[in-house]
Length: 456
Image (cartoon, rainbow, N blue to C red; front, side, top):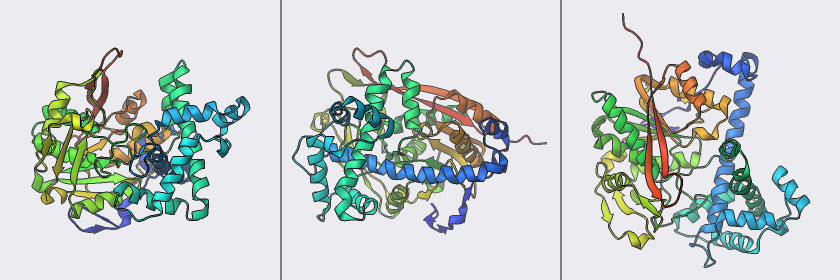
């Protein structure tokens, strides 16, 4: 069971498994890829099992990144994951290295001593009660992933080896490929499903909502689905531990909708749909215990990196529509990161619900949504999985409703057009400039609109 924005429980039957009939507009594409009516159900089952395995791996990815970077459980210096991956791989002989890059198999004895020591320190810390919210989260994860306490250290060391293969492939192998961007994209389509999220992602969606407002200023947004809202646990680099783990996107979306006049607080319903049960539980708790958000930019300003003036303006107003923000103007106190706190008002928190959904194989029943936000999740899907995810998204989108995403794959526009919600607008969004770099730090946002049926 999970909670709806109206505060009533809904049965798990509201989550529906996708069927061959649901993908009618894509049958020729699916069949060209070897997926037929006869084999569709089995493919969906395999894909869902694979997705759940990737959820587990994604959680353990964060655990490894936390073990390397956190300063809350050990006085040892933080280790940048890419540098740890390079040290590990370079310690292997050539035959071992080739085998490792092919199979993820390598001797645990070759793990760098500093990484091994940090993992041991983390496990000791997790064995003692603590009030640190990240340590509490990872304590629950470790005890469920490695129920045999005597096997935990070797288990976590094996996860370190697995994670380092991805990091090394991304940072040091893919960069030398002629088609580096395509190689990196392929790595993401098989890696663990990350819960990564950051304050900057809210700015991209804000720009998309502003475009939506300009195109249809009188079209109200009452029901919103956020696919993969995530949870800020431990990113691959730049871990910031100033506040507890948080799912920023639902609050940033609500704030933007209210600030832009697209929605009214009294009739707004927002559902955060995530495949990760831990994220869903987190959102469920925040409905009845509104959070005090600690908003810290993932990007840090220095002599070479400068936020754009538009991003600064966005961060300055962020949170004003959902709470009473206190802005900490002393940016230097957080190492060049913009910082503020926002306590979400209880009436606003009541608009948020949550559901556990695998968007590739499942969809929510009930009334359709006026807006669906799906940023930073579509890159994890191969083209066939993307087709199923888009079919599920389209089935949940109301006539005239809008999908916002930031996936640049050309095939996505073709799929969406076939499903009846073609591309309408896009924007390139600059977050910061980097001295000497060929391009600024930027993202893109794409807007698709569900075609309303013709009336006779």
